[in-house]
Amino acid sequence: MKLNTISIASIAFLVFSISFTRFHASEAAGFTIDLIHRDSLGSPSLYSVLTPSVRVKNALQRSFNRVNSLRYYDSFKSVSTDVVSNNGEYLMRFSLGTPPVETLAIADTGSDLTWIQCKPCIQCFKQKAPVFDPNRSSTYKPVSCTSNACSSCDSSNNCNYVVVYGDRSYSRGDIAKETLTLGSTVIHNVTIGCGHSNQGTFGGGTSGIIGLGGGKVSLIKQIGSSIQGKFSYCLVPYLNEAQKPSKMNFGDNALVLGVGVVTTPIVSSTPDTFYFLTLEGMTIGNQRLNFYGLSSSYSSDSKSVQEGNIIIDSGTTLTFLPTEFYNQVITAVKRQVKSTQVSDPQGLLNLCYLPTGNVEVPEITVHFKGADVKLKSVNTFVKTSETSLCLAFAPASNLAIYGNLAQMNFLIGYDLEKNTVSFQPTNCSKK
Image (tube, rainbow, N blue to C red; front, side, top):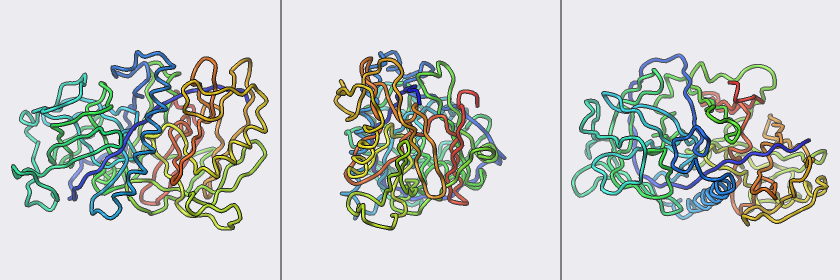
């Protein structure tokens, strides 16, 4: 296989405490909206003008920050709050309030709470869009401290939230109900966070987060009945897309049908924010490697596969594998790639080659339960500099994550009624 590389990005983590009440959404059989990669030429991000090598370095570092954030979750297991990762890299355009105010926020399947920066901004990061002013919206309704939708109040008797990220980014503000518009679809009484104090590694093109996880306050769960629990996305390789955005679909528009579709179950696990799948192994070229679980229970002699042993996440760039299995993958790739091995100038990835001529890399197939996903080189290698092409997998001590680099140029559909994820090889730039 000839190498055609690409690179993308990811970031941090959050903690918040809030309960949820249902709301009414306007009926919509199906609708589609654009997703704009933070580092693409079509992004309004303040950082989209950086050179490719700097963008790759920042992207990979944010990916490692996100994994460290997920590890941070372990210390909160005994606390009665929702603890989830946050901050993906694809921006979703939407409007908030009445009259509607258009803005962009990071779409993330690894987080739940939707929040944006709000006036008064006690301390806010720089954004290009106007900061949302709740006093100018006729549909903004603060959630009362006495409401069942509130589980935390401040000294001023405001129902509030706090999100804390693994890289020390944060957002603090009030919990409210508001009208949210996606394309022409109007959704009433959405539970949101109105952030008055927000700082950290957020790009200027975003005003906050759109939570698309599986937890009780995620946007997906809030509009679940109107979209029949279905959503999908098709991620365009962002350095190739110029002004071409990726697409995210809801409801009837989110069906993944036709030639090449493979489907795997979503496994119920903790925290419910994440979409857990079962990875049975990988084939590197013609060598099958079996995967039996996370590092704490990993055994190459085991005959059983641990259910729900990997998270699929739109907000993590790289695919992270437990160290023992990762080492097997590295060894198998080394056996089959004959090009000159070099060090990663960024110092982040372990297996890199000199990109002279046509580098032949093995086809890698990911074996999920019931679904064999054949990756292309765009999914498996990343160009970290003009002199290095690196395997886009990394080791992790206690978790496995199927990142968004591996998801590009696939139509990926989530059906939360059937509890499945489907994959279909697709040229996403033509969707």
